[in-house]
Length: 223
Image 1 (spheres, rainbow, N blue to C red):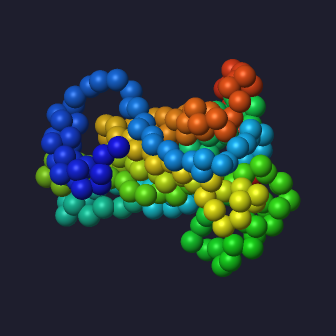
Image 2 (cartoon, rainbow, N blue to C red):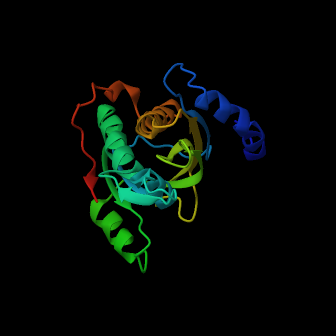
């Protein structure tokens, strides 16, 4: 997996290619994982905690610069990265026989007690923590400063699994990376969710024999 400084060094030529309208295959996530060699599990119930509020802010905004001085006004979209990613993750988990419930971390939370109560009430086999590690934004200045846009074009997620049988330990961890052309962040959300579940299966934490066709309208349980 590429190091962050390598990505920064290569980012400008990538943007130039994307800006030129290059086309290709759908974006594919890169994922690398490590696991406690003593850890064994066949996950049936997973509680998901996600904290991607910076990416959510970036994908929630649509920049519309229409006044003669090029001033921008952010208009809220009806969705964001988290709202796209969580239902997709639940759908891919459901396809391999794993039930999920989740909690999205917000800036207004005063203590983790609410999350702890949710976890205890649900009784999962493990808790999956997903946090934003890094993301990139490409800005198109438009014509003479008019109709400028901003798009998330790369996302890195840090994912870790904890199990109460191994207190104060991370039993599994994965780093996900994906890049795509402007306007494709919803596709990136889908690919990241799919790759995450696939990697858990590849690492032996989900029995592949339980795999079934995903439901088209799979919804993530909880809030």
